[in-house]
Amino acid sequence: MRICCIGAGYVGGPTMAVMARKCPDVRVDVVDIDAARIAAWNGDCLPVFEPGLAEVVSEVREKNLFFSTDVDSCVRDADIVFISVNTPTKTYGYGAGRASDISFVESCARKIAEVSKGGKVVVEKSTLPVRTAEVIRSILAGSGMDFQVLSNPEFLAEGSAVRDLENPDRVLIGGDDASPGGRAAIDLLSSIYERWVDPSKIIKTNLWSSELSKLTANAFLAQRISSINAISALCEITGADVDEVARAVGSDSRIGSKFLKSSIGFGGSCFKKDLLNLVYLCEHFHLAEAAAYWRAVLDMNRYQKARFSRKVLDSLFGNIRSKRIAIFGFSFKENTNDTRESPAIDVCADFLNEHAHLAFYDPRVSPKQICAELGVDENDPRVEFCPSAEEAADGAYAIVLLTHWEEFVLLDYEKIYATMKKPAWIFDGRNCLDHRLLLEIGYNVCGIGKGNLS
Ligand code: UDX
Ligand code: ADP
Image (cartoon, rainbow, N blue to C red; front, side, top):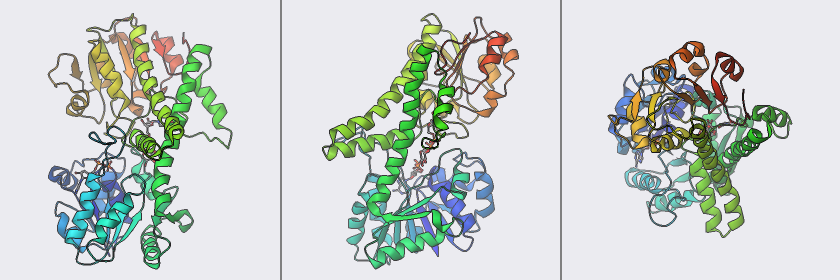
């Protein structure tokens, strides 16, 4: 059995590494057109940072896991081909700003049809608009060979990808369950997962249910965050504490406690893109009210980020021009080097508009990456990159914590306080610090949904 995965990104790389480890008798080739990325996967510094990933890769690389740019021969020789390429929001033409750009997926389907010598099972791994399988199917049908198209969306979260892949809540496989060939393909893919996943966790559906379930799962998760963030605004006015409200609400077993952590807003490559995709689908099918409902989840996220930057500005007397502000964390969440749609981008852009001087520290994100996201040059006098959180805070008027890296929780804030301008502010955009302690040290503290802390 040979598996090939097209796309060596945040999804393809970790997913295939875990699959190769769990299936030592299966050869897994991960291919990409980006030669630099493939070189990085073959080197010591992997292009994706994930806890535990380097260990998995070093165990199986060059044994049954191979990274290569030789797309044609790896696809040709595979029994199962996963498509795990990027599907960004379309930036041009019809549906711009909302619909997903599936051009990369289409070119993969054309490549599979072109180089294959016989039928294969083709698996959509990327999150796609509902009915994309139909596009893939019709391109493959032109080849005259017997292809089966499956949808097998990935539910891993960055930062815990290896754990999520090794122990998933469920594996979803959608296929043409009305035909014997479709059912055989579903069973073949299922047999791969059954090597390490309990069969009761493998959900088999038709193609469209599988495609739509992925969008819906992400929309529900994002909606919970926007819901608690909407409540956080109310907490700040009424004196309620959003973490206490979340705990009280989340202990209702019908609601559950996860994804109720109020923050500066959600980021990441999936939530916004998938919500926009859902809005676009609803609009396409003339479901204006359903579209407006899901759009509101995004509106709330935008509002939360803007509200936070405004609070920083107002607290510093409406003036942050030339003031040093320490930015703790830039990735969209902890334990990843991914900055896609990070709320830090909008918040820092607001500060730069006010001509603040930003001193960045993120344990995993490079200065180059931060500059690319903010559209500034590394030599821009408004930005500075520090080798530690302490150095970023040295001489700062405020610390703005944007990512919940564990090392920020463990810092010696008393020592840091002594090096800062007074009044020294901490804006905890993740509610992860000990606010009582910080107040005792002498900081002015501002969390999310915490009312006035004094
Ligand atoms: C998400 C889904 O969780 C995953 O199942 C899907 O496959 C891909 O999209 P990911 O974007 O990697 O995963 O991270 P996730 O843990 O979902 O966090 C997304 C954003 O929401 C982050 O910015 C995070 O900080 C924020 N978040 C999460 C909150 O603000 N509060 C919460 O309670 C949870
Ligand atoms: P994700 O988070 O979905 O994994 P990434 O952007 O991290 O998305 O990775 C997608 C990868 O797919 C990129 O490395 C990109 O170079 C690769 N890719 C896109 N189109 C093709 C293609 N036609 N053939 C091979 N690789 C492709």
